Image (tube, rainbow, N blue to C red):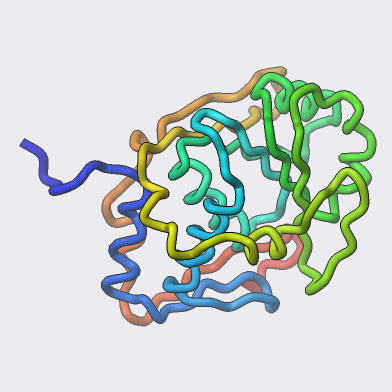
Amino acid sequence: MSAYNYQLLIKQLLHTPLANAPDQEIVYRDLVRYDYRTLVSRIARLGSALSLLPGQTVAVMDWDSHRYLECFFAIPMLGGVLQTVNVRLPADQIVYTLNHARADVLLVHEDFLPLLASIKDRLETVSRFVLLSDSAKPDCPPPFSVDYETLLSGGNASLGHTLCGHDAGCKTSVTGALSAGCAARADQARRRDLFALRADDTAFAAGKPDDRRG
């Protein structure tokens, strides 16, 4: 007999903050502040705009940001695979993990554009590139077709109820080994109280390694 009245899918982690602390802030550095209602809306719009097929892999090269948080929900909720690219690996190992994971979409922060330029021609499966930036209106050089915020603006927040079919998982590269990483089903790592916020709690996205203000 289960203690839960619903399947333990990743979308269920959003129920507690929405019910108990919907106005609490998520803070990324000194650049972004929004509440959990906005988070859920952005997750829905991201999922709608990505238009993934089940099993497709989206790789992300970003700092610990609000964008990463949104990807951690939206991509598995679509039945896709989130690949968290370890940007501290040597370039050859980053290429190996991206090709082994058969990444279809690559989200890249503008800080890593020199790294992308050095490996782009060796990526075998990536067909879409999305630029991540902390700037309001970034330029999108080739091979990028769109920046992240523009992508979200084309999504539909009302389609959030469709992002619930099944969770896929995540793939993460392992430092020091030529490994594709470990694929893990999201339900193996979930805890009911992960987002059991108190009324005075604030969630933070850490930002860059040299900037831990929020």
